[in-house]
Length: 435
Image (tube, rainbow, N blue to C red):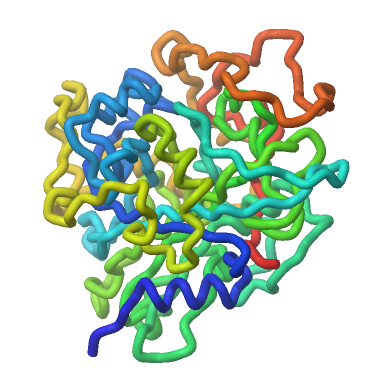
């Protein structure tokens, strides 16, 4: 029996209030362009701490932190020619009972939703939706989170949560959706904030597990997002995808949502467990990165004119589409750094991949979510910090309340790869995008 998954997803999003007839969206469909220990935002110029599954431009590399870097790509694994943005998350592995690791295949395409929602500023002024600035960088989720302050329940109660902290909202922005197309009703987006165990997946998730991550959409107008690339953004007050913006974050960007379907059903009745490439067995440490790189003014035109509620890219005339064959054939064009060029990150592996087992024992032992593991090493700033991003993007300020834009009187603290305490955890809270 055949299902039109895109129509099912659209219906669910409308039902949940993630989209409404007054707010359009589109789904950027992407295949993998690479699987490697690369993360230019956190581990600039050197191998990443863990393996990432990467979508988008072929020029993505350990030093590709600017839009110009990515726009020089020979191809993209995403469905729109003009979109050379890079989207990446940790990979998911299955650990067999004998200790062998095997990457869990994805069921393409990965979807990056762009929601065109607005709200009001903290002072109550209506907002105007802005396109992401060229070269915009952002991370959602927390790599080292292994516990939660949320109740361990499913389904998690729907919003709104106007009094919830940003930390709570960031936790609610992570979702693990059990897919069972022949057994209605399907689950709602981001209603489960932890990764189900193997027995539950075998018994109920006949079509796999969908990993979900919502990014903040409120912005303070700054380019710099701090060491973890999230201090410049915040979640709106209603839920994680809609509502009004908190004080100091008056400007509104498109809401970005990642959905990646993992073929966990391929491992049904096999002994073992699932583990993210950052060593996380709980799911609390799922996270995602993005660098925005659209050609010319395509994104600006799309935000202004692509108001069809179908979510289909073909309904936006400013997009030039790529067929799935060319998407799937796009691959990273630059040789991997010698330190990781010969790493086996896909085929069955005996033991942990480099970096994976390092923090696997953290969860779910309760610990201070603002601090790092005691044994976590500090990154060498000269090796891992990308060149400084211009402090304020070349965008007209939308508010006359300049005091609402945080200003730094001193240099940012040293970049500590595992110290969450150096930032304010602006995006640690979540729920969903509900009216």
